[in-house]
Image (cartoon, rainbow, N blue to C red; front, side, top):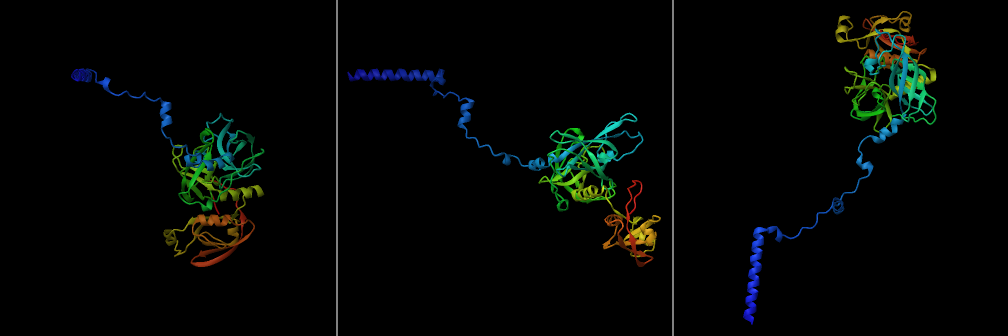
Length: 390
């Protein structure tokens, strides 16, 4: 009996092994273990541990807070003025403030610029060249409100103009300290370039105290590589805290667009000019009536002035304070009051800072002799672009 059972078992095992051999040869996939059903995308997402979403402040590394603080106080300005003659030459192309296509003779043009609200009662700063000669000035805020602006006064020699609008709840920008700026500090330029709408560009302070560019009479520009384009004139240059540090005024460009060299008037200069205009309607500057030249070593040797240091008087205006005091062409001005002068720019700044109708002691060298004169300071006349004197 046992022998028979063992025979049956052996035959069964032989049949099973034979079947497995045949299947593994012909259909090997039948012998592979069954795979679980592929998970859906939703199920897979639940199985993967995703990192938490960081807060917005950690996701944004930039100047959004500064732009948010300053942008509401920056406005777009539309200025209408008579169409210039076809042969008229203007400074607009240099300053990046074109008035657009010329209208027919006798018509008007509309030009676009920017401005900055500096007080909640509606006082605005912009460039003189933005509103110069304009018969109508319209201001549009970033919130869409519009108002006609009144021209309070201008100062062409610094290219600053002061406007006034009447609207409630006006945003005013905070004023920064331009004197504390350093080369490499981050700055933002805010304005309305090419009338595309309010735009914020970023850059750094490229240089400070830029002068002798032939843009204004009094120059002490902040240079920046923040993009400044036509329509940005009069807009805000702000620091990383959103405070006003300059009024964008000019670009160096051969094409009319930004090449990364822009200039802004420091806010301390703009603030002083605005204060004088709001108080007196104009900026009063001192004047003594001399025309000067830089005293180079070569010129000093040619004129036999020895080692004289100062500014050479090239001419004296008739009946001007300098003429009345006895200053003559050929004199070398060395000191105005307590300030020594070494260049025409030094002399211009020192004289302009004097109060008209005051008196000042002026030191000169004449034929190798030191001399001193007392002058009654005059009022600096309105500028003539063709010629300037101190």
